[in-house]
Image 1 (cartoon, rainbow, N blue to C red):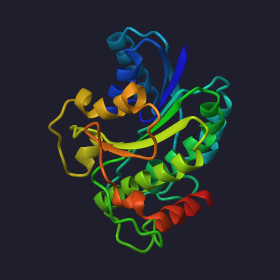
Image 2: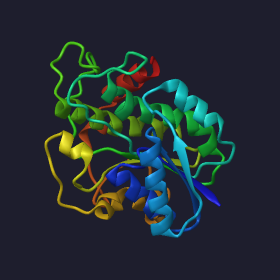
Image 3: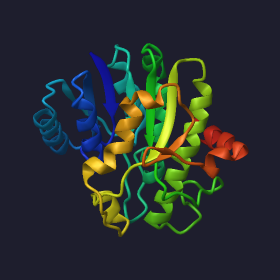
Image 4: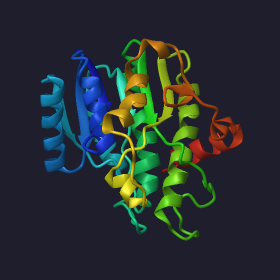
Length: 259
């Protein structure tokens, strides 16, 4: 049985992504989250909805590097799918135990750290895929002040910055993994009414399943075999000007590497 990992797996879209992968019955799905009760309830929902009993609950605080590295060491098997989905949008500026601004830590560095930590596991799988759930709601990245130490904190601006960074890091990792049979792509999920969107002051007009459609498609579909370093919206390849900015992509990767 193949292994798929989904971060932020008890969120509205995350749970739908986990369920969409689990329904194939070919995958043991490891659902990651930091709240044990919410994680347990979401995993049970996925077991019931998908009919897949191979649903593993992985309790993990993605804001901390040490936790990600320790979790990766507990996995010995090849990992075939890694979906980086977890994001947070606190309305006031918060810092992690490591002293890092929370959105930068969870929405950006956790993507970076998860790919790094699981590269050896992905390399063991034939045709592994990394799916970075980003957004079309992206922009405002300031590489001189990524943690909003100088700028005024507004969670919407901070979120937009993080999703731009996720798209840019997709290019970096795709280039790193050329020739390793690991594809790395990013996408915008559907617009779903969720805790995250509500924190940003928005609602949503799509169902969780519609929101999860493109990430699940990128994770499973034969249509994207061999495709890497791309950004998708509604299953369509979409030009990304952020990924095209080679100098900024390299600078961002270097900044993330220093944490």
